[in-house]
Each structure stands twice: as C-alpha cells, then as structure tokens.
Length: 130
Image (cartoon, rainbow, N blue to C red):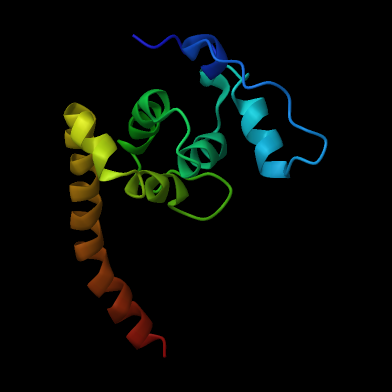
C-alpha cells in the first residue's frame, strides 16, 4: 500500500537534486513536487507530473481514484485536464498495469456513456437558443 504521507523522493529513494540556476519554471515545480507528500498533491500537481510522465506507478492510481466519482475532476489548466493526462499515458504502461487499465477503462466507459446522453441535449439546447 502506498504511503501518501511520503513524497515521491522518499518512496523511490531518488534525490533529483535542486534545480540549476537557469532551470525553467516547469523543472523547478516538478522538483518541488517530488518533495511534497502525496496526500497534499492537488489535481493540478498530479496533472503536471502525469503530463511529464513522472512516477506513473505512484501517481496513476491516485489520479484514477480522483476520477472515479467525477471524470471531469480537474486541475487549473482546463476542465478534464486530469482525465486527459491519463489518456496520454503510454499503452506500454497500461499493458504492464492491467488492473489499473481496467479501472481506467471503466472511467472512460462511464464518461462516454454520459457524453453520448448529454451531447444531443446540448445540441438541442443550442439550436433552440440560436
């Protein structure tokens, strides 16, 4: 079981060091996030790290947990950004983590069901208001 009180640095035992003087904001943020306890990760933090493909074995399960009840649970980028970050995870990762893939496939299935129900209603609403 993953100890959410620990940081990625504590869990994997890798210290990536401090950012160089000329490091980008993204590099600085990711290095800072490696030292942050996982329980304190925001959706934005998860999205940022997942888009960078960092620590997928630890972060994907957390993201899936957050998406189960609301697939549009989001960070600060755009609505659905956390879902999109998982949709961009490589097929190799999913092939190596079939249980997680099954959980995520179910989230995607439920999202698609909701979308297929809602999309025509949105279209009808927009047509009435044009």
